[in-house]
Length: 565
Image 1 (cartoon, rainbow, N blue to C red):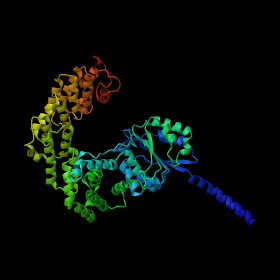
Image 2 (tube, helix red, strand yellow; image 1 turned 90 degrees about the vertical axis):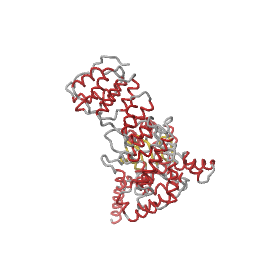
Image 3 (cartoon, rainbow, N blue to C red; image 1 turned 180 degrees about the horizontal axis):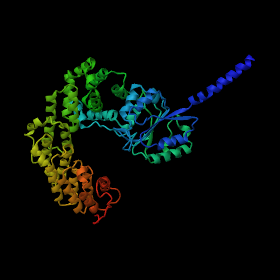
Image 4 (tube, rainbow, N blue to C red; image 1 turned 45 degrees about the vertical axis):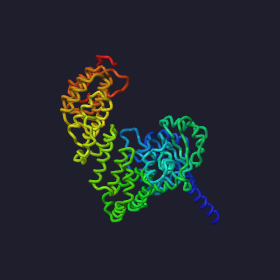
């Protein structure tokens, strides 16, 4: 009897344990559905539920969903990420109302901190459904400024060019190498080297793969030639994550110094200090990461004794400061030079007066070389958004040629009223290049004077042809017009033109205007009566929809009295 009871008890325990063991044997497919769910559903429909379970990591309305998944101890065997993708922003949605995203910095943080071993540490495969997720092209390049820096330090030109190529390969930051860094040791990472198919199309290719027996390959940890072949002509590729024995492993260790939560801010700053001792060309390749880390330090962190000491050690390092500033002054692009100046100030290498002097010297050098275009105007207006450089603009008198619109725009960015007026004149002038400079200026310095807006609107109406009118009108697109006289001028031009492009450009201004002033019955009726026919949806249609609920003539239907050209 005792033997029978023991056997029955053993059978009961086995029956209880069996479902648990079967469940434990299932592989976990973790999904991050930032945009389209088509790819996820293709996996879900095709993989047997007795062998695979699915976990969606995104929690709607929660910005820390990745950290939440890490804290919950979710263990992933397969990771499927779907979304629009670019190298800087990572994965994002095309839905206006969606706020979920997945940035490379988020992934690097979790990968480097080892704070998320369940999600990242046991992966056999990663599927990245987004454009350029495995693009091998470098994001950064070791440019001529790096070659010149190496030559100044004693290298021959051929050696300098060879070293610069090596820096570009190591620090270029292609999305492929970044994903290999994040998903280190993962045997198979699938992604696209260029444009990826949209979700429904990708799902159809996945269905073809699964129907051909591909489901047996999922979570095997082996790259699948069959899957790559199923996406023939759509740039799908597969790579392996970095291994500790790979040449790039040292680079990953350096990157992780910025993200590893197990390191204190002072330890990270000491690593930054070590980087600043390297060749300036190499420091240039780390500029993005050093900038972001320096900017992330809170005032509380900066005030702690160990961080303050680490910052002081950097600030007192005169040789590193000298090398860094010499390289910054020789930068090819003024935008790079400005960024390096700002970082030098954050590191304690420049006080307020020295920073201002460096920035003004940068502006002076560009003016002296007559190397000023829309990008430089945008840069200087942005740097001087708080007008802290205005008092120093007289320092530029020896290099400024006031009649040049490009020079006038630089002075206008520095608060010169006469130069401001000269730039506004260029907006409706004959030169496309000068008009583009004026557009860059207005983008940073929106007009607030009704008189100036009226003057420009009147001048636009007198311009000789539709092409130049569109150019000027598009420069006003970001102005929020509330002046009734300006709105009347734009409405009159809308009614009198026979160009759809001109009407579309005007609609781009009016759609941002003050509706309390714009939605007068006479204005809306004029717009409705004189709108030209367009092929498909246009900004004009968007404007009409905005105006209809706000006007007394909301139910008027558009009647075309002239024909589009």
